[in-house]
Image (cartoon, rainbow, N blue to C red; front, side, top):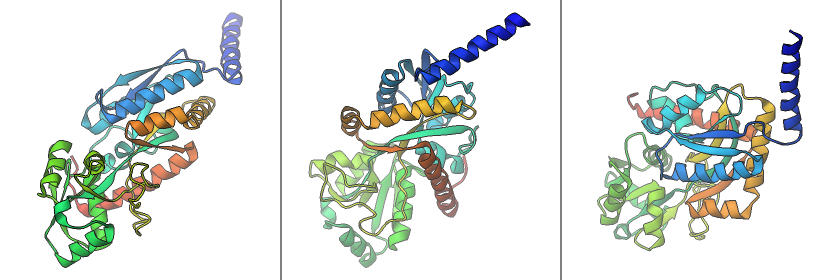
Length: 318
């Protein structure tokens, strides 16, 4: 018994000592990315893993577990041992919209500790030049003057682009028909050809940058560096529309607070790095740091917001 107690004391001493010395006590940490390799979430996860490896003086390896819009990998992360050895790259849609339209095996508000928000997806509302409008005010005026003539595209029923589109139309008092496509390229092509009149998504940014589409507004907190003259939704009066689209780091509920604090500090230090922020921007994301408390508050608010919105849309739960 004495030997056992001595062993336990040694482990406790090592753990406390490691935390006190600002040394992460686990040599290899896995970060579950609930998406297939090569996509935006995967790219962001790898950049974050590199920063955490460097700042926590440990090795953070990526484990891609895609499927079911990210909920399969997220459920696996929820069931992981809460010892700091498993992290999750959390996409907002998995926590704020999927639970309302998909059967999931985890509680988005109770099964995780939200450590810090790192970035947000960049989206834009764009229209084809053939529509003849060049501003938010002109688009709304056109929609009201020509009721029932507008179509808008997304990558599927219940997608973020679809949901934001519904909220946008309700807010401005314009009607439009939703046209779901099976992929981003098809939706963009429909917009370029004039088959649909607007899209709210990241996929319209490259052709808007090339002058093939007309950028109208961005559902972000700040204007995009490449489009300094394009206003935000808030600037044109759409302050209550939430676009979601953030990427954050989470751990299973029950993970020691000391480890959570270490990871949060490492992410905050990364956010202060111009190189890391520039890398996120090049990858198509907007750097956006939120503390654990701020992220949890935002998560709860968006969960409630999208829950009410999706309920009003009467989408069947899969």
